[in-house]
Structure formats: C-alpha cells, structure tokens
Length: 355
View 1 (cartoon, one colour):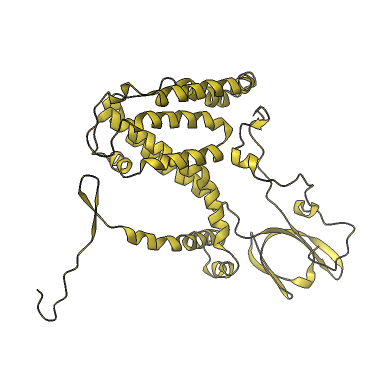
View 2 (cartoon, rainbow, N blue to C red; view 1 turned 180 degrees about the vertical axis):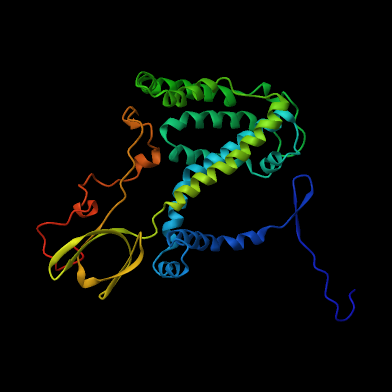
C-alpha cells in the first residue's frame, strides 16, 4: 500500500522471448513511424534550400513527402533484401562455426525470424540486376543448408551441418548447373569482351553452390563475420542515403521567357508554384518570383537515364536490368524537347505558357 498523496510505483511491462529471458516492451517505437516521412522531407528540403530557413519554409508549402518516400522505397527494394540476407548468412555461419550466442551478431540473428529470408529472397529476385542473381542463388543455398542446423536459441553442435539433406544441396546444385548453361554465352562474351568483373559475378557464385560452406575456422569466423555484418549495416545506408539526397523534390522545367513578345532565353529551373500573377522557381541563385505574363512556354524536363556500363545481355536480357525493370512499363523513345537543352521553341507564338 502507498501512503496518501504518494505517487504509485511505476512498473514496466516486459516480454518473455525464447528461453524465458525478459525483454523490455518496445511497442512505443511504432508511434514514431508516421513521423518518418516528415523527417525525411524536412531533411531533404533543408539540403535543397542550402540550409536557409526562409527558403525551406517556402519550399515546404509545395513539396510532398510522397515523392521522397517513393524514392526511398525504390532504393530499399534492392538494399533491404541485401541487408537481411547478408546478415542472415553471417549469423548462420557464425553460429555453426563458433557455437557461441554471446556476440551481437548472434543476438540480432536469433531475434530475426527465419521466415524473413523468404520474402527477402523473392524481392531480391525481382529487384536485383541479372549479374547479381547467381550471388542470390548462392546466398539462398547457404541459408537453406544452415537454417535447419541452427536452433534459434541454445547450443549448436559443431559439424551438425555436415550431412545436409537432398533439398539443401541437390536442388541448388541443379539450379546452378541450369543457370551456368543458360549464362554460358554471356560469360564467354564478357570474358572475350574485356569485362572480367561481370564474368566473375556470373560464374564464381555458381561454382561455389555445390561447395556450400559449412563450419569455418572458429577464430576466423569470430573475427571476420561480425565485421562483415557491421560493414553491411554501415555501407548500405550510405548508398541508400546517396540515392535519397539526389531524389527530386520539385519538378524540373524549362521556362522560355519573352518580354513584349520578344524571346529573352530559356532557363532551367525547379518549379515551386504557378499562378496567374507570379511563378515561383528555384535555381542555383535561390528562389525567384517570375511574372507569369513573361513566360512564353513551359516544358517538363525528364531526367536523362544513366547509360549502362555494360552492353552484355543474356538472351536479350541486359545484365544490368532487373526483372522488375523488365516487367515495368517504360517511356517510349521520344526526342528530347529542345527547351530542355537550352534552345528556344521555334515556330510557336508566345501567348500560352503551358504549351
């Protein structure tokens, strides 16, 4: 009992995990998820405004977090499976090799459900480029073999993975042989065409599938595998952040201006807002307000796609294309608007700025 006026004791709820070890409840973290897109938007606009608060306040009136979240999700389509599968492989190899569950890698792996590897593998199959799919096959084969030998909690008997079943070895080996037969012309073209990295990405994982790794030397596994998992946790967010910081927030347009019916040039700007009086744009010098009556025409300029570094293809499928990119519709090859290249539009009057 508590005395009158005394504050009652505060208790924390705990959740029992695995063998009865209490863990603090972390459901409150879910309340932070709705604020995540807003934080992303403010951070990106802060960079776009060059750390100027007034410019950032103006841009936030027109910017939407959906564009940034979509760009982030596009990056996570390939980075998320790479992170999940990479850490899962490091965890399984570490547990089989050392039998210890005291490292941070073992604790993270033990608390990650094994079924997460299934959707991660399916998403990687759709999102990874063709040249990385042999590596995906090797990764899945290692997980299939070692997952059945490693308990979620408790000791591991070293050498228990030495007699894998038919599903764990034969089927991945058959798939590797079929993939090698299908990729053989592409591998030969990469070898003779001066692309040894592409050839290695296509061949080396397929050769390693029949030689699935079991237990590694304990000292090597205890030192290298946690470092490899930590490198994944550090490097992949950097790549995702680089993609995120380059994501467009405002539409990129070309403005053809004219004063008294006389063209004054074409400007490449980001469109903030457009009304009957002023058009607000953003360029290298900052925010500008252009009288709408001085705008002759406006052209929406799409981003120029990055040319592929490799021209190799496997039966018409480019090695730098993913299944998702192959299935998704693409823009038809249309000529680039001359205004997006800095040239004024010819043969048009200057009456309608939306043309």
